[in-house]
Image (tube, rainbow, N blue to C red; front, side, top):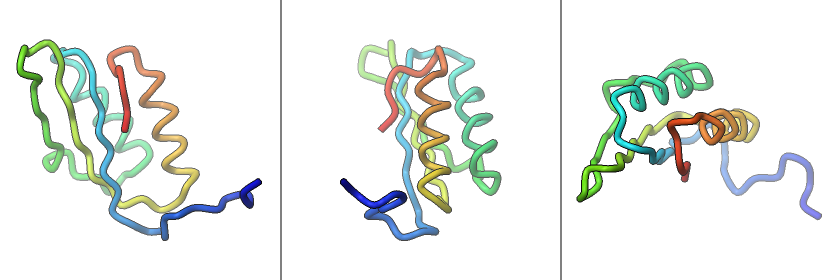
Length: 89
């Protein structure tokens, strides 16, 4: 079993989060609110948005400065539990 807190990442580090969900006007704002809650230095203007070819889905990329494994785990938990979010990579 791996050691508690063992990680392949060295913190702090630049870490891209890719969030996918249904194309909904509220998705980007909801994702931004969650990301800023866990990574207050994140600049929402740097969020990248791309629509799927059919326009039904959208992907958002938020590149944060991750400070700990706990921070990333909390971000993933909150994002994946949000009703507008389908997948977080």
